[in-house]
Length: 149
Image (cartoon, rainbow, N blue to C red):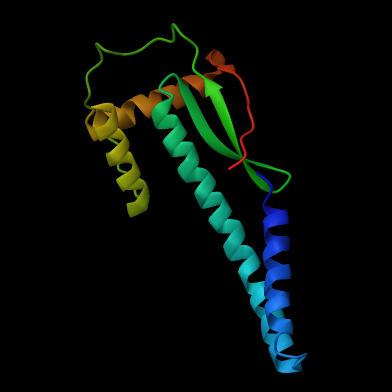
């Protein structure tokens, strides 16, 4: 996903709108300031959209993990296939706890994903963390694809 062409198009569109003021220096300065201020906000919005796409794809691909990575300053989705035969811990007691602080929007995404999968939030989070931990331990086979969003 290439963010810069989108930002350039928006800059051109705003500059064209500012030109309708007939070359007023105050309007030109205001448009320039607006363009400069919007750049970082739009970059962040692109990353947030990519994260939402990754979450939705991950929910639809239970045997894969989907994450947002930065490639040349732009967000990209990396899909990793979880190796089959990775050990689970079904006999292990669930008595360890971790307290997480997360944004309400992520909490809602997790709750919705768990509901869609027919799991409790706890089971869904444990499964997601186990998949990520197994992948990080080198037992996962990685495959990367690019997607245009």
